[in-house]
Length: 328
Image (cartoon, rainbow, N blue to C red; front, side, top):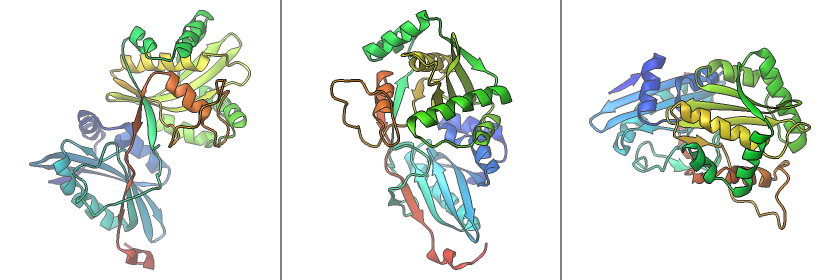
């Protein structure tokens, strides 16, 4: 039986019970709704189990594009056909040209769910990431690269303090100033301040803003979410002047400890390059710049996790006549 959930509590409880991602949480959907998306939440319960899918639908005039990030959330693979039958019924109302599913796990059992084909272009989720098991402190440090572990301990001895900051206007401006510095230094594009303000407002129960303070002020910042068993590091930034070796690693270490205290068992560092970049001969990479991800790769690997490679996205193409101008 398919149903459309209209209350946050039951939806999030079901997603958590099936170890689903924050990208399938109620708050994540509301964040996208604020950005102009339509959001539909579909639940199916049948003899095979329970299936959940939060659809994010972007309208383009008479047509639309539908997305399902880090989903669906399934109790068994066998419930996938029934769930996507219900998803198709929802999509009929919005007339999307395509539905793109960015899977959280291998697509076992989904081959016949809705005539999917393998896609190449990802919408919002990385193809690979690094996940750190949230063990007790010594084991957490023991998994790190030796130099990273030494830097974490040295940063603590230097008196670096990590604090959870209230996400008010002043603190978000401080974080954004760090992000602007990082953008100039690394040549990566960033979203406007309003993007992060909206994120922290809509994910107020899941998101945490952390600062690492050195003697001269805030040296680095990090925004994570904690949802169910998983924490994700979404946005990080650091001061060009105040950061010292190990400051950011120490910030991540403390973020992992906080996530563990909140009941999380794993920490997703959110994104690696699609393929391992070539190593830097004879030196540690000094940082990433533009399309050069070697510094990011080196930093994340040093935190002692394991690589998770996500399957290619699946794409469902709906009737091409929907592009003809037919309105729903």
